[in-house]
Amino acid sequence: MRLSIRTRLTVWYSTVVVAVMVTGAVVGSFAESKLALQRLDVELARSMATLQGVMRTEFSEGMSLEDSAKEASIEVVVPDRTLVLTRADGSILEVWGLPMDRASLPPLDGNDEAATIAGPAGDLRMLSSEVEFAGHRYNAAVIATLAPVRAQTAEMQQAMFAGIVIALIVAAAGGWLIGRQTLRPLTRMAEQARQINEQDPKGRLAAPPVDDELGRLAAAFNGLLDRLASALNLQRQFMADASHELRTPVSVVRTATQVTLASEARSAGEYRESLVIIGEQANRLSRLVDSMFLLSRAEAHGVPLRREFLNLDDILAETARAVRVLAEPRGVMVTTDGEEEVSFTGDDALLRQMMGNLLDNAIRHARTDGRVAAGLERVNGRVVIRITDDGAGVAPADRDRIFDRFVRVGTSDGAGLGLPIARWIAEAHGGTLQLAESRPGCTTFVVTLPADSTPA
Image (cartoon, rainbow, N blue to C red):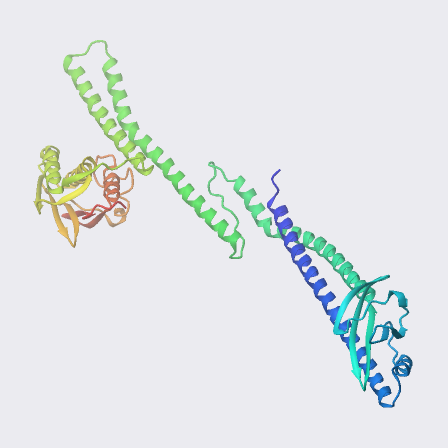
């Protein structure tokens, strides 16, 4: 079973808190035990100094070792400690203070260092010293039980354990509440996201007012929704425009067919005229469908470029020669000039289509008996193609719209797909297509291609 984010946050938060508390408790317990032992050793050293001081005083007064030991047992009183004096051979002189069986007394090593030893009732801490003064040699020891130290450490450990349990409960409750409060905006955003569908793509997430991770997530998601809504609107607009464009030739074909079949007898000329109309509309439909298919594949990045070494001046001259057939009925003259041997690496078919679309657009908008000029040159390491016509020009309000699909301005009878396709082909080759100038008598489209043909 997959745990929720809130539960995982609570578990991680509680685990970290408990781990820190346990580590602190272990370190604290060890440090307290060591400090308590050091304090006990200091007390033992003070008691030893007091005992030796009394013994020296007694020796200075001329008393014997036995009398000095007896006198010290009376004068030196240390609660909860056992004091021991022995001769140099280890025989006991005096034992007083905390009761202890003489038979269980450990041997005094006299190394002047405190050590922990095992006793009959538990561990002991003993500090012993070998003393020689005024011709007398003896051993002195101060012994203390470790039970109070161990009891103090145990109490501290119990208190820390209780603190860890309380901290665990508080951390779990706090982590749960913090996770709930923190993730509440995420829950609301998930509910809002479920309510957004393709029928009403205008819904957006209510972003938190703070600039944190959730706020940035909501902003990024809203940006994604904006882009998807824009793409959906474009798709719907494309379908509507395509339907509108396809409806006209289909209606013409249907009408011509119905009119022809309305009478049982028709002359050969009438049948031929109907077939000519149907053929023209079929060609128009074919071009329109091919253009829409190309744009759809281009938007889906499904049109790979077949790159090969080309001469753009040859392509431009051949394309101009082909479109002169379209220019002759209107008396439009198509001319080409510019540099020769302009090499380029690109897709031959697409580049021919780009130039053909631009020249066809110029012929449609040129004035009757007018002129269309196509030029090619190198400028600052880039290839520049200029297509100019002498028509009425593009109105300022339409200059940003002419590259949109199905947009037609003036008296054009095209489908409104030539310029969008031409711009896509230019951009696919790493270049640009722009309306450089438009005024009555002069409209110029400029294609700029990189010399190395690096894709955009």
